[in-house]
Image 1 (cartoon, rainbow, N blue to C red):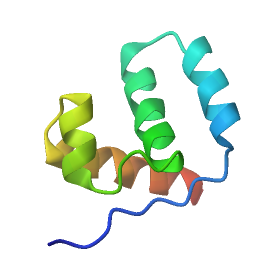
Image 2 (image 1 turned 90 degrees about the vertical axis):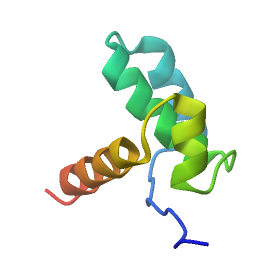
Image 3 (image 1 turned 90 degrees about the horizontal axis):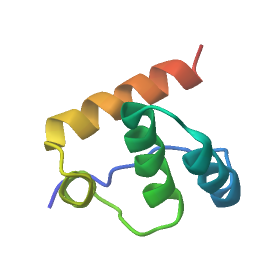
Image 4 (image 1 turned 120 degrees about the horizontal axis):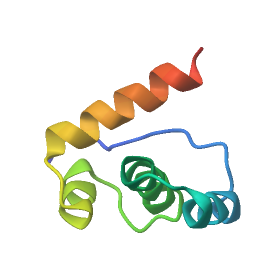
Length: 73
């Protein structure tokens, strides 16, 4: 079993849910969905996220890296 897939998410589930309903682009919605699924505890691994979102695990890892880079700016 691999390392746990962790991202520290400061936003509340409610805020993420609200943003999901307002976002306009599909790519943004997918990334917000990823955060929502992690924050709500529905998934805990990259493999589960990839399966639910219909994306490759490498894509999920790339999104995570971009989120972390953005949060640390």
